Image 1 (cartoon, rainbow, N blue to C red):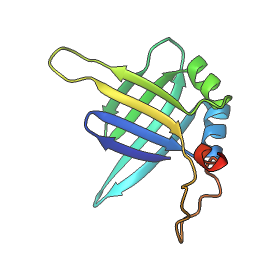
Image 2: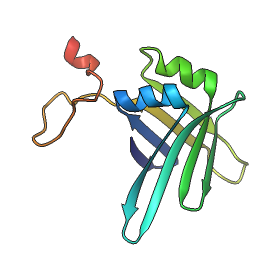
Image 3: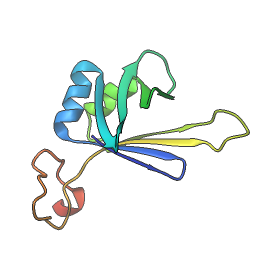
Image 4: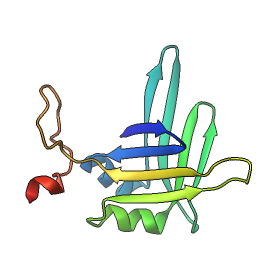
Length: 123
């Protein structure tokens, strides 16, 4: 699972195996090392009808309605997108979860065997 944080948005890109794991267990997690600290992040399917994001103990937790998550995992739908607004004081946070595609131009040394076929390559 790849994580990108930029301009009030959090973007996750998942491989085919990660999407299958999410469908099977309703949870997926990963970590990245930042010097002497570790940033962990996870996506979890939960009961309910809304998405939320928590940040605690150097961990980003994204909770997605389980029905939406299962439908996305089981379909050709590329992404799930949510906008979270906490209060009028803070800008809204964009959450994007998407299936990771192979690059159109092959990159030396990069294993893309578990990525989804790029729709633009099929045209």
